[in-house]
Length: 120
Image: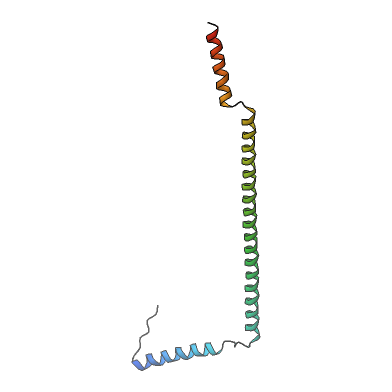
């Protein structure tokens, strides 16, 4: 950087005032809010924001639909599992009815034992 060598304070203050005036002129030279170019840029930004909002809403709806499908799949799987368990329980009950009871097995065992003892 170049170092400016000021001879006195007044010269430094004048340079600072000139820089302020240059900034103020640059600010005043900017187009106003009613300028066509500014209005076009604002309309473009608004259109971009609306398109972004629409994309976000579509993504949100898709995400919610996916969550709903997953929930329905879980419910269907749980219902199928419950039906399978109920069918298995019914099969166990039916199978238990087909088998002889424990008392009948013990009675036949005792009868066979008694028959063996009689034959001695």
